[in-house]
Amino acid sequence: MSSFAEFNASVIAEFRANAGRVGGPFEGSELILLTTTGARSGKPHTVPLGFVRGDGSQLLVVASAAGADRHPAWYHNLLALPLVQVETGTQEYEAVAVPAQGALREELFARVVREEPGYGEYQERTARVLPVVALQRTHEVDSGEPGIAGKLLDVHGWLRAQLALVREEAARGGAAPAALTLQLRQHCLAFCHTLEFHHRSEDAGMFPYLERQHPGMGEFFRRIAAEHEVIAGLKEELVRALDGPGAGLSERVERLSRELEAHLDHEEDQLLPVLRALEG
Image 1 (cartoon, rainbow, N blue to C red):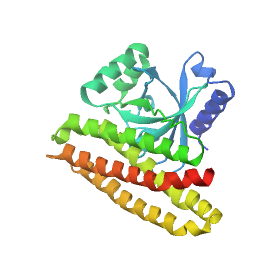
Image 2: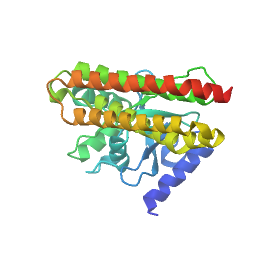
Image 3: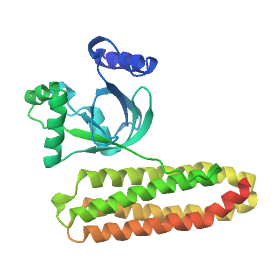
């Protein structure tokens, strides 16, 4: 382990042992721990970071790397997988990481520098533009229903909320490729990764477990798994639409997101009565 990695590990350990308080060079500073997923390794990667409070519950972090000429690894990770974990010392929650662009980036960076002038010094050391990343807390949708059925509704509610954000951003951007913001991309990727993980968990975990408990329902669960293949195709089509923005983008996103919502509705229509009966 490098000396820098050892230093980070010691800060992380102290942070977790003391409810977010650390000494040494960070004495008196507010830090968070940001955990991303390795873009290549797929493994969790945790770093201590300074932050500035943004609007609402949003936190702002800067991919400064102390003014180095390359973006830090955690920034590349969140571009590949926007869902991150944030630890404040008293809370731990999931967020969607959205780098700011254009005039918004300039505005947010100026706010950061007013509060933490050191970031301005880091910017002077490098020709690269230091990314400012907004950590937008994901608000879990609580269906209020207990058991496996409730968990399904909670996840589907979160997925619908992400689709609504994707539609909103696509409509705001219009047909111009330059208007395809990172906000749209990051929320779309967050939706896609969560949907994939959710269905993989169902197909590999929940469905085989329930089938073992109720062998006569094997065909039913295979039909649901086949539905997942259809949804996966729609998800990939949505990603391709974002990769090739232009005229009609908003309409394509609207159509695909509505189709995905319809499949979520269909899955609930089929699966919820069965889950409720099995748990009842």
